[in-house]
Length: 452
Image 1 (cartoon, rainbow, N blue to C red):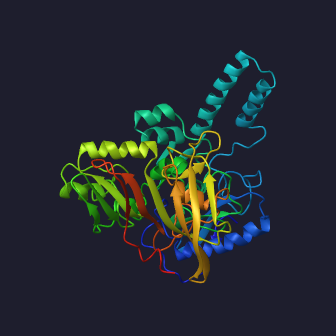
Image 2: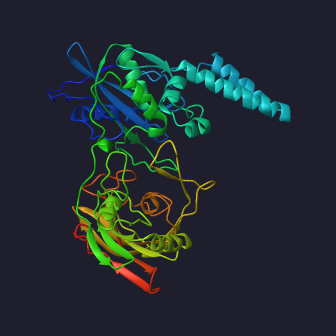
């Protein structure tokens, strides 16, 4: 049976899930518990994303289940929805062409290499044309059409003329496609990771995750048309909190940014430390930033000369910063240095991955300050000293299994959700752009960081 019945009095949500940022609905939690029993029976050997879609037909609730890509090398498990397009048939066009390309690889030559590339590109284009995705309006488009319509930016189109491999094979597109084809009404949806984490990314067994942005954002933007969907939280604005001035003179200021406040204006909200500073000091500029969820000290340059002077210090890495972080679990070694190169996926921002071959070097020094029991769990307070300034460097180095393997508390991207991200820029040391004196400024203690 593909549609699995749900016998419950739980009320349906008013609108369908916004798949890129959500808390799982109780109906999805119920469905996931049943799905986990089936996964345990299969006992897969690799980590995999699984998903459920609660559906309604003739006033009866049920759910569909899916996995991303292949499961144990198969895409024909009875319990799960089928792929949007089955490219795995041994005698099918795709597999025949794959064998032809593999045969060319057995006889390397310049002509064969050129032919191989051309055949591979043609086959990939043919494959994406077979994925004809439906939406709630009953309209149909293939992946190439959807991709080109979504990515209007010429730079993206030039760099990524076709969708990434595997597009259309993630859980959410498979689930919605089956529901639309079988006239089932989508009610809510959720996805979770099962098994060990992959080497480059960070995934936690049993944790819920949003749909991926690189492969799924263009596809789901199309497929969700015609559904009444929850609002995108990223378009609802951020906290308009007060900024505290820690230090000020004629050239610079140091301010405290609360967690949940933007450093610079975003797509959905102009309110930020930068706009706040502009209102107070007309010629002000920010020589650096903090992540939205990170609290702590920031420098503000009041004029162009001070800005360029501070920026040069950041470039030369002569500015020293100290962060405080509360991480999950016990960090065994009291002091150490993490050296893991990082890179970002331009189609799946803001997530970072460990990239040994092509990533930029990222170095973080850490010192254990305290270990304690916090809400029944062991946590560690760390002092973090970034020697480089990569995006999400501290968060990745704490969370990744080749780093500390201890996510920062409240890190929704690489760890687990909490009331906030427990990361604070506590102090900064630099040369004053006017006086030439070395300064060391501290932000007021954030009681939430220290509450254990």
